[in-house]
Image 1 (tube, rainbow, N blue to C red):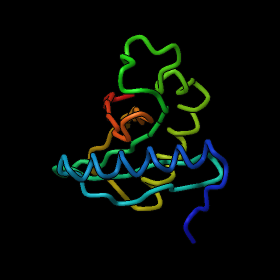
Image 2: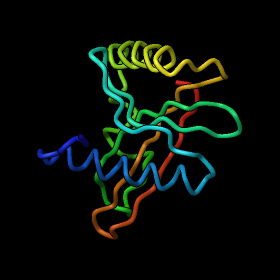
Image 3: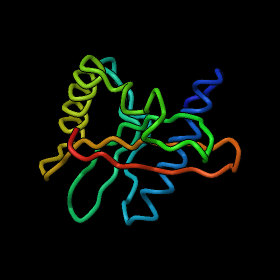
Image 4: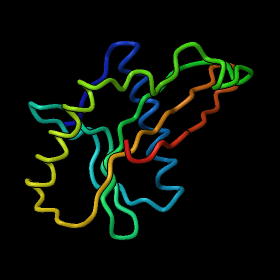
Length: 129
C-alpha cells in the first residue's frame, strides 16, 4: 500500500521526490523502488544506472526562483545530519541483504528547490554522501 502524505511538510517532500524521480529518469536512471521503509529508516529512491545501484536521499525546500541557492539561509542538505546518515546506511545495508545485491552501489543526495513563484523546480545532486 503506498504511503499517504497528509501534512504540509510531507506533501512538499512528496512533491520534491516526484520531481527528483522525473529528473533521474530524464538522466537515464531506472527506478527500482521508492520510499523503502524498514524499522531502521527509509530510503527515498533506489535507482540503477550502468550496472550500479544508487540510493537517493531527497531533501526539498520551497523558495522563490529569484533567490540564489547560495544565499538561502537553510539549504536542503543542511537537514542531512549524522543520525540521519547512520539510519540511512543501516537501511541501505538491509536493502542490499534483502535484495541480494552484490554489485557496486553508492548513496547520493538530491536537493530539490521548488520555486513557488514560477512553479518550476531545480535539482542539485551531491554524490557519495
